[in-house]
Image (cartoon, rainbow, N blue to C red; front, side, top):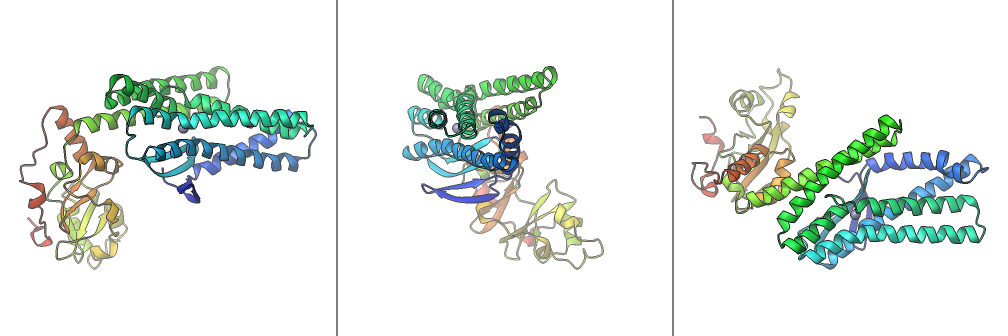
Length: 394
Ligand SMILES: [Zn+2]
């Protein structure tokens, strides 16, 4: 989940929002101002409803953030690094780096969020009761009561026992505790999550068709998200198991098809781009150092009349050094970036030794399931890869 905007830091944890949260907030403020608040408290001016709706929506966002902070702070307590918290369409997401040290930590990290939400529900309910008793007016009572209800729903819904929901993590932690096998526990929780997602989609569809209620659509989106995230979770666990011990250098495509910075676009297209199955290619300088990446989309923007005099250096994008891999890195650490659909350059001793593509990872996985490790037949990956532009032409 890419953060669209940074909000700042809380307890040292970077907080950001994804653009989808603005859409949801807009819908929420609209719903509160025109349906929920007028339904609970009649007779106020329209502007008052909208003003209170904004405050209530902001409190809801704060409650979502508190839920995620619950996860994040407990995780940090157990030595798991927290990269950040992102709020988005379907709630919040804490990005944790690394694994919890034991099943109990895993369980407490998972439980912390729903506990915060349920506690929030209690606080807002108490607030509504106090406001009602002290004659604060029906508008404040309605707003606080709504916050109590949604926090309650948030807490309970998140405890549904299917990964990636918190309840799925709770289930995985408990199974880990009982079975003493974390991979098996996560796989089981992922399977339950896929079933849960399918049930949510079905429930949403029924609500949409039988009750003609549009909120069924939201339930379907949520179900789809749960199902696909659960599938990703199960895949991740399986990959971790099958790819244990496999390194980037074992599976990379080497030598990599690449161009060099002073080469013309016309020459590169004729000799390299059209002959190789990639959509992105590394660009090297004359010393064989990686200086950029060029994509077919980028090449297509050069008009055919300009291809002769345009150099690859003019159209290549600089390389993000954090997206370059060392051949000795375990493939599993690199797999998420690669499987996200990118071609990742592999560099050793400052030289390009190969590239890893989603196909390479998939192939390694399938070979591992056959019980064999990839053999590229080209000798040791780390030493065979001096692929200088000079020997690019066959
Ligand atoms: Zn949570």
